[in-house]
Image (cartoon, rainbow, N blue to C red; front, top):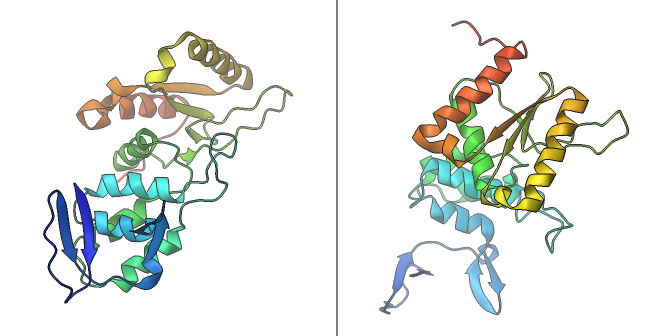
Length: 223
């Protein structure tokens, strides 16, 4: 299915597999991909607010503003900045989905490398746990290889690693064991999260992380 924006007042367009949206579109909200005119990343994010949930918008926004890893990607700058997303919200007052977009913008963070990391962070914060840092490197004072947990609490020396489907292959298992040994050598606690911990609103994942935090000395604030 293709979604097409037509200016208000433009002729009707009736094509199979095409959904037409009539709305205001500014010139700087257009770019080209392979010669085709498309909406910019930030405008597309705002348009998707009509169809996505708040969490899905956060995942998309995290991906938009994340700093790419130069060694793996053919770019070295984010797709857009938080300020670009805010500019879309400010410009299109009254647009459908605007409330969700505003809520999502408050939750978007730079540093998440995957949808699973974004969803895990949201579950952690909503459970009343401290907000973790994202892909922040751990200084290796022993001269060994540094670590960069998916999510972490430096104060409590806790690193959280989300393990996707690729963590079952032999080479990755070897790397994961090496990583666990580095955590132990640095005096940090490693919390490993997988897909099975994310079901049922991520309750199992949150429980594992809460246990690690409490063991490290964290206590929830009294109401």
